[in-house]
Picture 1 (cartoon, rainbow, N blue to C red):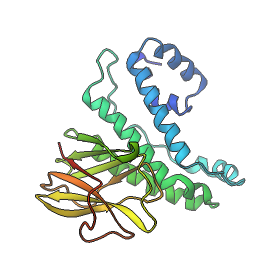
Picture 2: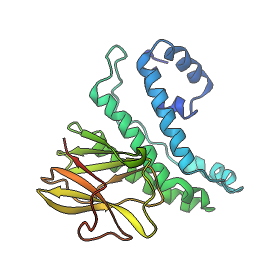
Picture 3: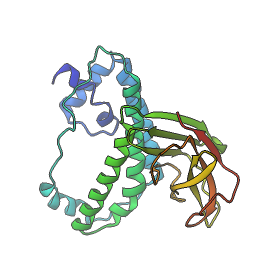
Length: 249
């Protein structure tokens, strides 16, 4: 294994997804690499939190179905041939990539958690995976954009809200962590602030405490966003005081 490759294994190591030889090599490397220790710890915390949020018991037939179908699924190659330079201190771009992984893990939990495990048929599971892959690709397009900027604010009861925007992609991604469950029959609705006029940016899943949402519609000239509690199905305009207001970077 090339020395530069070891730096790319922190996410897989945190998810216990490395073969034995790579696991041993990474554990040897991480004792001397502060940046990889930090990333491994952060990835582990995110994975643990999301695992608890969507714990389900897989059906008995799932393993057999997956093993039958796994040989028919083509594995995608890496999107970029570039490798990180181990001598370079992690940049803002690399730090943002951790947001991208955390957000994609959150999206995977929200979109693929219990529903995928409940499907007995391999074809349905494959369709679900394809849909999830497309959603994650759209999230990653914003989170990894060259001009992506993020803002984070605290919410009541220890929750946190982060919004990542890209003027180049004309999109925004909202990341809610440890969100309190809205009252029965209510949902969190996201809004673009168009110079004081609030435009709907989509709804959050009321059953998910941690979720990443690609906000609906273009970013346009919006200078910020808001979150309100609205009736199920959403509203044409805000009908309650904002839970949070976040300015765009």
